[in-house]
Image (cartoon, rainbow, N blue to C red; front, side, top):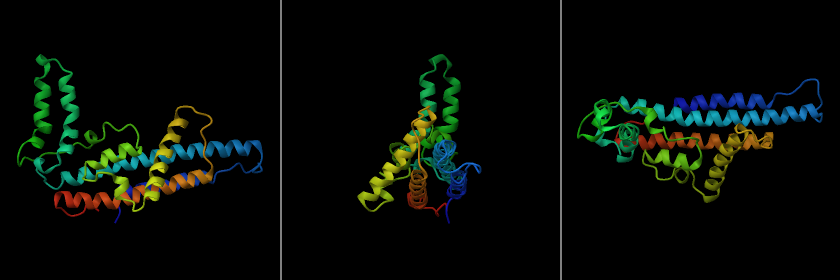
Length: 228
């Protein structure tokens, strides 16, 4: 059974594919207007696909945290890397606040994060804290995120051969780079329907394999049933 995040991502891909079938009914395929429309459609598909891919990552994080918050797991059982990431934002905010104004910050930290640093204490994780640093779902950032749940390199964990690993890494990187170029006004950045299909294939492969892997990792890390 896939996660709700993966199910939503798979449904969202329908929108990307449907957009690729759009055309101007009164124009031939070689008309300049048709070529410009095809170009605009390819660019729009890349932006949509990248947005849905990024949303999968954020949604998956929310789903993981919601599940863990319901498992009554003591703070000291979470990996140190998770606890440090969760506490990073309030600690940095406290550091930027003058000493005489830190009372409220200290109280908030003890209330929201103190349980993570005490033996046997329980509390609630805030999912935003674990991804506040991510600007885009490029391969390096994805590797960093999934380290939180015990996988040193997610691309190595979900592929068996170096060729597939390289292809998947470059596919994800290419999608993110192309989306950024389009979003930043690069009019030369474009994608054919063949390009779009390849990016869909890479994004789908990554999400489907990650979905299975992270469910297993969560179960093994905390000794609890798989979340999905």
